[in-house]
Each structure stands twice: as C-alpha cells, then as structure tokens.
Image (cartoon, rainbow, N blue to C red):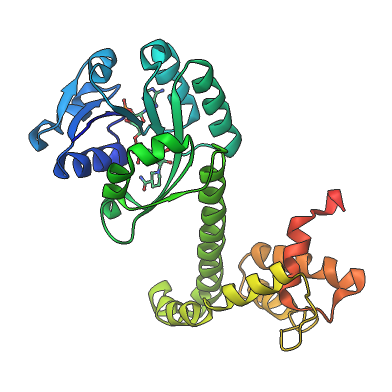
Amino acid sequence: MSSVTFLGAGAMGSALAVAAVEAGYRTTVWNRTFCRSEALQGNGITVTRRIDDAMADADVVVVCLLDQVSVRDVLYPVAGALAGRHVINLTTTTPDGARDLARRAADAGISYLDGGIMATPEMIGTAESTLFYSGARAVFDTHRDLLEVWGTAEYFGTDAGMASLYDLALLAAMYTMFAGFFQGAAMLAPAGVSATEFAARAVPWLQALAPAVGEYAAVIDGGDYGVPGQQSLLFSDLGDISETARAQGVSSEIVDTVQRLIRRQVDAGRGADGFARVFESIRLPEDAA
Ligand code: FVH
C-alpha cells in the first residue's frame, strides 16, 4: 500500500484520512493547529508537527483545507519539497482558482490533480459519496484505488478547473432547490403550518418531479424548445405564487427572479415555447443580450 499524507485535519480532511488508514494506507496527517490532528493518532495515523516531516515519505499528498487562500498559505512555502510529487487538492476552489494552482504546480514540477467532494464527512467511504477530479491524468490513474476508498471517482479531463465547475454547478442546483423549499415553508408558516408538515408534502412532490430534469435536459440539448407536450412559458406565469407570498407577508424575491427569467423569453416572443427555455435567459444574461 502506498503512503498518503494529508495536509488539513478539519472535518473533511480527518474523514478522508481515517478512511485511508482503515483501507490499509500508511497515513500521515499535518494540520496547522496540532491538537486537531493529534486527535487522529488513536486511529493508527501518524501525525507530525512539521509539514516537512509529514511529506517526507509520501507517495501522494492530499490537501483538504478551508479555501484557496489557505491552500496558497500552506503549499507555496513547501512547493520546492513537493517537486516531482503527486498532489491531490480536494479543497473547494473556483475553477479559475484550480487552474491557477495547476499552473503554479506545473511551474514547480508538481503533478497536480484537483478535486471536488460531493459528500459530507459522514458520507465518505459510503455508496452515496462521489468525488470529481480533473487535471493530471497520471495522478488520477496512479491513485485510483485510494480515490475509490472515499467514494465513486469521476475524472473530467486535463483542464484542472472542470471538477470544480461540476462541483459548483451541482451546488447551484442544490442551494436553489433548498431555497425553493424555504420559500414554500415561509408561505405556509403564517397559516400555522410547520416546516416539518410542509416537508412531508414537499419531499414526495420533489421526488416525483425529479425525472423532469432529464426531460428538460433532452430539450435543452436538442435545441428545440417548441417540442409539443411541454408546459409553455405563458402557462408558467408565477404571478399568483408571487402575489400569495406577499399576501402571506413573506418575501417573493426567489419567485420573482424566476418570473423575470420567464418574462424575458415571453417578451422576446417565445411564450409558446416550453419552460426549459428559461435556460436561455440564464445562459445569456440580460446585460449580455
Ligand atoms: N464539510 C463538508 O461537509 C464539506 C463537503 C464538501 C467539501 N467541503 C470542502 O472541504 C474543504 C475542507 O472542509 P472541512 O469541513 O474540513 O473544513 P474545516 O473543518 O473548517 O477545516 C478547515 C481546515 O483548513 C485549515 N485551515 C484554514 N485556514 C488555514 C490557513 N490559513 N492555513 C493553514 N490551514 C488552514 C484548518 O486548520 P486549523 O484551523 O485546524 O488550524 C482546518 O484543517 C473545504 O474546502 C470545504 O469547502 C467540505
């Protein structure tokens, strides 16, 4: 088994390290605040106070820190020691941030793989966990067994920014979906309906509608928003929802945003097209139209 060093013993870094040692990898952890990594010693993990000691024998260095700034703070001073090594960065960064790190890594002679974790720490190592990767193919291929310890490993090509782009696109879908739930819960709250009561209806409703995502995707990729059988944009007017939100004394901002995206297409004479055409309002923002 190869030797893996983790830089970062936060909630996620610790979960990744524990999964690695349980799978039989020789595992070393360094963390800025030593007491946090020290807690991992009982799991059979080697912890070091000095970052150089942590990296000395590593076949691969896994970085899981807070953000782009912390990655720079930690990696730049040790770039020389990382030359010729494999580095996998699982810190959430923007795609451009990942590309910047990949460029700097290449300049320093480091093989760099960027990653996005589609899981919480508790999910690491379970069937529900997926991690996205992009960047150096050789790093992905060499350490594939380790990557599969944490969850399904998907590779999105040599552009180091792609894993992050997929990660953030899925988070965009997640946050707006949850915000939609909060909107409905807020509308019902003044009527004495608890969020829990609403969730009991919202969960099966959203689950039943989830397959529509694939149908919308087919329309978007096909490029023909006039395919018969779709709910039209004119039919998709959200005025009643917005009015009801305000009548309930709650914000209608989320609904109004979607309504604006619909209206842009209707005003452009596309009202008979299907709801999926909202994609075009997002793809081409108003200031770029
Ligand atoms: N936790 C989650 O559910 C999400 C799931 C999806 C992916 N994210 C990303 O994973 C990265 C790490 O997240 P985390 O949960 O481990 O975060 P924390 O528990 O807050 O640990 C942060 C670690 O970063 C270290 N750190 C922060 N700033 C610096 C710095 N300037 N220099 C060196 N280290 C730094 C911190 O060290 P310390 O405060 O203990 O000394 C922790 O080790 C993250 O990108 C998520 O977006 C997790």
